[in-house]
Image (cartoon, rainbow, N blue to C red; front, side, top):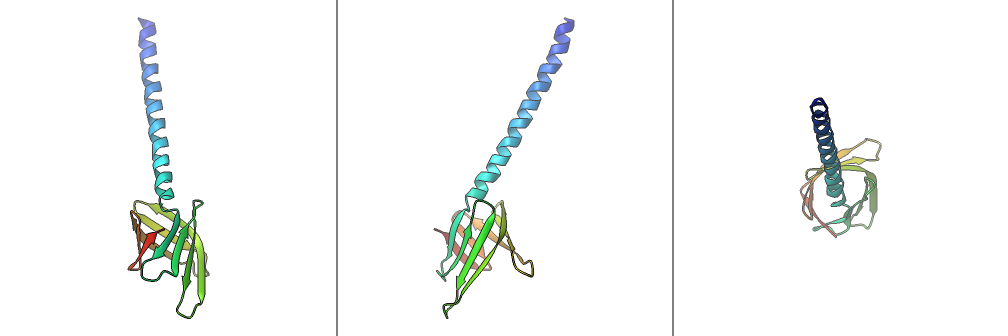
Length: 116
């Protein structure tokens, strides 16, 4: 009987510990899957020469060709969570911008981008 009183609490602790561990792992996997869903090239529907490319390593590249054929390229890092992508530009001003993503549509300063 004394042995049973000692074993039951030990078994309960082990079960709770394994449940907590599995939940934490699933949350990390969900975040990775969410970030991977935006990886790829996004093209502006009004100006097809304006694109964002999100890489799986957390970096991005923005390319914009103006009407004179001048190509501007910007790079930086991004974070993505709950439909919001935060862009941290590698420029002298340390610019930070925000875009929203829903499915295969990204909205950035009122412009609509579609994932290729």
